[in-house]
Image (cartoon, rainbow, N blue to C red; front, top):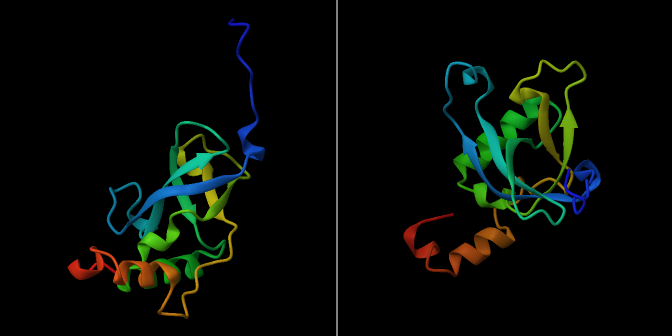
Length: 132
């Protein structure tokens, strides 16, 4: 074993969504779970990211409602940078579903159409392409 290795407990490190995608389609194993967010999560000062499911709400119906609204309004970029915390299944099945990340930042202002992200996009070259 290398003497210069230091093990860190990254569960206690601050984490955020580096980038993400709202998945509206999935393979057979995940089709019942769409839509869902697949986020690339940066934990602490790690130089790498990990991909995992991100939940906006612990209530599955509310989570789906929020995701559908984000997709409809093309506001998916608002997920980037949100703070998240890891969550683990109470009874692990030893699958990718045993770990997910829960958004702990103040949840997106879904009742307000105008947000900082849309204001920035409206005044950027992306805004002229219709990206919102």
